[in-house]
Length: 181
Ligand code: CUA
Image 1: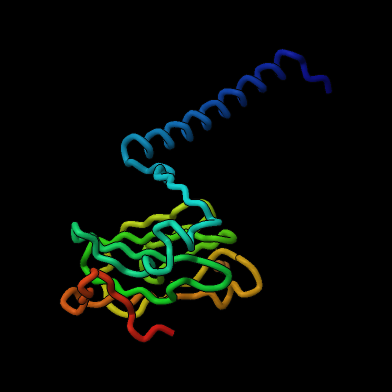
Image 2: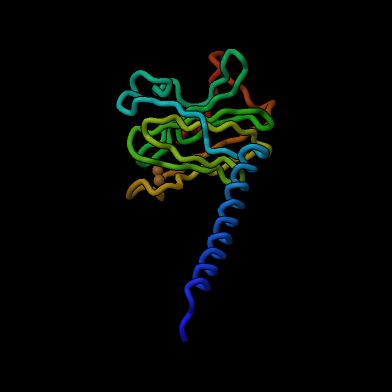
């Protein structure tokens, strides 16, 4: 049975319209999410030289862990490296806006804090920053969730969330877990 050419053309045009319609709906959804719901890819880009982070950046050893700065902001800094977090425990106050900052000197790591929406990749050369507020107290597990080598499954840290009145930074504004393992 022969199909005539104009029927084929019509069928192709119909499918073109269907596909164009689907593309328009998807583009519309993306624009709606971006403009109306403010759902966008991360915009904050901060660079750090992975070769010198131990020596001269804000991630030198003395600067790691939890710190309350002059403006009262609570900031915790950690290095993710094969195959540990440094330090491997940070203490943070509950019901307080906190900033977590991470970087890596070697390979790509990732992390999440169980029971919260904290979840980020840590890429060498960049600072990964998370703003959050912990509502529950307790020792929260923070595993590496990006395969980074043979010791990946042993790479885990603790986020110790304490009630606000039990969060007592020292005179320099530093606070640590105390029993560092
Ligand atoms: Cu670090 Cu997996």
